[in-house]
Image (cartoon, rainbow, N blue to C red):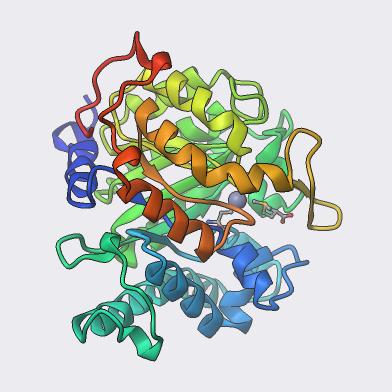
Amino acid sequence: MGRGGDVDAAGALRRFVREAGGCAVVDGGLATELEAHGADLRDELWSARCLLSAPHLIRKVHLDYLDAGANIITSASYQATIQGFQERGLSRERSEALLRRSVHIAQEARAIFAEGSSKGPFATHGIHHHRSAASSARCPVLVAASVGSYGAYLADGSEYTGEYGRSVTKETLKSFHRRRLQVLADAGPDLIAFETIPNKLEAQAYAELMEEEDIRIPAWLSFTSRDGASAASGDPIAECAAVADSCARVAAVGVNCTAPRLIHGLVLSIRKVTSKPVVVYPNSGETYVPETKEWVESDGGGASETTDFVSCVGRWRRAGAALVGGCCRTSPATVRAISRALREPDGDAASPDDDDDDLPAVAVL
Ligand SMILES: C[S+](C)CC[C@H](N)C(=O)O
Ligand SMILES: N[C@@H](CCS)C(=O)O
Ligand SMILES: [Zn+2]
């Protein structure tokens, strides 16, 4: 048994999910919402660029997601790496400070939101809004430190293919992520979100790093998929989820930045190999074009899929999802609708889903 043998990260997250009403709301796309507010992310650093140029905008977007009912907000560190910043001429110290800053900005937003909430239902940071049930005092907001995959750093869209080349081994990935993970963990987030993972190798690297660095902060491992059966690389999703299941420090496992139409089947496949909470935060269903860093409508869905996104939330929950949010090209409006859908009687786990027959019981629900 590893050093994490006495850790029950999944149990702690299950308690949080229960406090949140049985299914927690994760925020929506951060980078694409920054873009919607005018940030230009056509850059190798993508959203991490805003840590340098527009930290106030990052805080605003976090606040918008909190206003929309998010129980968990995710830091702007997805594409923030020490290597990426150093390639821009920043010192190691400054690079590490920017990583810490990403977590602190989210924590600042949470504090501002809490202060506004305590002044009454319509007083949050001076904006008249409808206080959501999800943001009740009973359920504290969690800050997740985002760790984007090695593919994110490559800035070539390989978080959607998992094609890192033969020379990239598990050790390469561990040494790439090690210091970054230490710095982010030291900044004091409540969770670590290893997200947009395209292959099993990177999941193994993360699980080993959590043990070797004795990271006590619960983490989730969230994969991308293009076919609904495997991670982007072609590694079966069940094998990827099993890696997460075998690590006591991993609190949840799931899928993000994947088309909504693939989510239901992926949740069912993941549930077959783990009783850890399942997290899903699909993108809009559009496809990312790395060369132009733009999104285009997909053949199989696109805009109409986005419209249907929220109507699927109850079904995903009945399939076993315990944390639901949005990824790229989703917005605070999406998160508000998810939050409402989960609070509706129909959004609960009471009605059995035909597809769930052969699945183990999940304690969180
Ligand atoms: C999740 S993708 C849309 C992030 C951006 C990508 N790594 C790039 O730099 O092009
Ligand atoms: N947390 C990141 C994920 C990108 S795939 C974001 O929302 O920008
Ligand atoms: Zn995304």
